[in-house]
Structures are given as C-alpha cells and as structure tokens.
Image 1 (cartoon, rainbow, N blue to C red):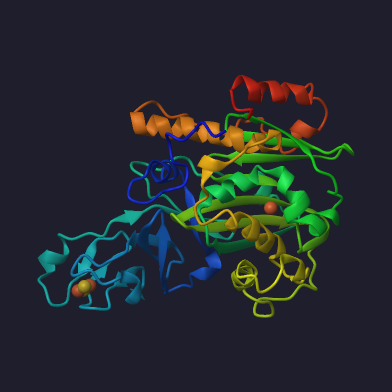
Image 2 (image 1 turned 60 degrees about the horizontal axis):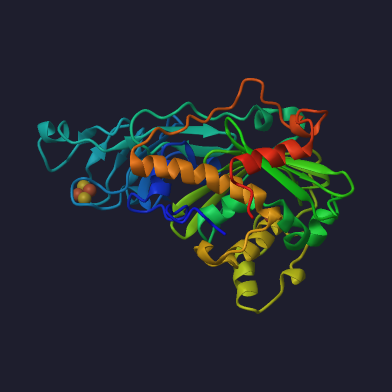
Length: 391
Ligand code: FES
Ligand SMILES: [Fe+2]
C-alpha cells in the first residue's frame, strides 16, 4: 500500500511541489565538455529553459532563456568575450547580465535592462546551477569523488525518457539487480537476492543490503536526488567503481542522469564515442519489441543504463503508484518516499523543511565495516518506527 498519495513525488513543472523542493538544491545541468569556450547552449530544468554559455574567461554563465527585447532564444546568438549578443536585433548583455549595447536604441536604454542570471559552478566534469529562490545552499562536495586514489574520473550524462523519481527510487532498490542486471552484476560476485534495510539519516537515507552469502553493499541517498555507492560499470571489469549520481528532473517525463565515477582499472578496450549505438535508440527498439535486453552487446559502455532504462521506463513515463504492491524488499523505496512526502507536505503547508547535511564524520562504507550498526535488525527497527516498513 502506498500511503503517500496526498503528495505527488513525480511532477515538477509549473510550481509543482516536487519541482519546488528540487529547486532548493544545486543541480547538474550539462557536462563541462558540452560547452566549449565562446559557445552557448539551451538547457532545461524543472520544465523551464535557460541559456548557458562559456565566455572567454572560461567561466560558465546561466541566464534566462529568451531575449528581453522580443523573445528570441539567446543561445542562437553570439558569445562575445564574456557577453552574449542576441541574433535578432543584436542586443548585447555583459557577463553579469546587464544590458551593454542595444545598437538601435539609446545607451541609456541598455543600462535599464538586465537578464535574469543564475549561479553556476563546475565540479568534476559537470556544470551545476542553482535556480531556486534566494541564496543557494552550500555546494555539496563529495570528497570520495574527488579522491584520485580511487581511480580515473569518468563523468557521463544521459537523458532518460521517464520521470526522475522512478530513477531516484531505483537507486535504493537493491533487489532489481538480480534481474535487471542479471549477468552483468554476477561478474562482480553479486549473484544472490539481498535483504535490504533502510533508514533516514542527516543527509537523506542509507540503504544496506545483505546477501545470503554475507556480501553487503551500502547506498547513500543524499537529498533530494543524489546517489552515492559502488557500482559495476563496463569501464572496470575487475571491481566496482565509486558513483555519485544526480537524477535531475528536466521536465515531468525526462530525466538527466549525471554520473561521476572513479574507475579503478580503466578498460581501454571498450568501444569509443561514435563506435557504439545510441543507448536510448537501443532502449526504444527493446521497448518496441524489436529486440530483447538479452541481445545487447555486453561491451556497450552504457549497458547498465540501458538495462535500468528498460525496467524503469517499463513502469511508464510517470509510474502509477496507486496500484502498487510493495513488499519487504522495497524498504529503501518506502523510507525514501516517507522522507520526501514529509518535505513536500512541509512545502505545501508552509511548515519547516529539514536542513539536510553531511555529518563531519561521514565515512563511506562505515555501515558495513565492523559494528557501526549493532545488528541489521537495528535498521529494521528504525524503518518500522518511522512507519516506513511496508506491510
Ligand atoms: S529579440 Fe533579441 S535583440 Fe531583438
Ligand atoms: Fe540498476
């Protein structure tokens, strides 16, 4: 049973609660490699378009989508130094968004018009922005992903054709691995169906899964839409790689998944860009019944993404949560929804929101090393006390 039906986790457009919640956090909007110096790009977040450009100082700037003169999309224009000039009548705005030169107008008119601008930041190969109200929160750094001793940096961005919350739920759903990623994950020793426990933490949620053979994994859900855990990726066939991933709501039915990995032993034999089929084209053929997931080349560099997209996209573009039958294996999903529902209700009702934060003593993997939790049952109790354990 899903008891959270009074709030909608999925829809983000037009001021929907989930969109207002996500907007309060920094979100990745593009990869650094997507934006060359002197170029502009149109991007979309929470159903709204924006202009992103990189000036000659190499800094990324983000402004409103359309020119304030008569509404042509600014990305169609030119980047001039650190300024952007509209293609239509040449209005030019400086790197702070201030009107700089309106060629067919008086100089005093340009001084009166500004673009709306948004804070940006580049981090580990991705461009992040803040589109929420007021000052942005502290930027969420992940020392684990900065740690070069964990391996080579790999930053990927993939657009997925379904709602972001399904992707976030999947991050905390350990039992899908045995089926959705069956043979692939088996290569890394994950061959058994795990038992999952979950609880709320200072930063969001933690999910611990334990397999009958004793193998444990831990997944961290940093609110609202970040996953940190070790995952198998085709780029390293020897061991799992560290992942910090953001599942960004582009609009109600599109997710931008930005994944920052540290890959220990990089497999150079994988097909390079341009040598493999577009993963979403493969997904489309599978969804149309033209081929099976089992037929996908296991050397495809985005194989796990293809596998997840088939299962998650198979729920529909926006999953219908009113007809679900959750089980004990859905604890991570249940705790995630409980935290989200509380925050969405707080936004709806004007109540206080939780200030999520990473504790100073956070240490990746501590929950599955030694006796951080005395027993797995402690976590089960935590989930039950919160009322999150499904019946
Ligand atoms: S619409 Fe941009 S300058 Fe006229
Ligand atoms: Fe998966």
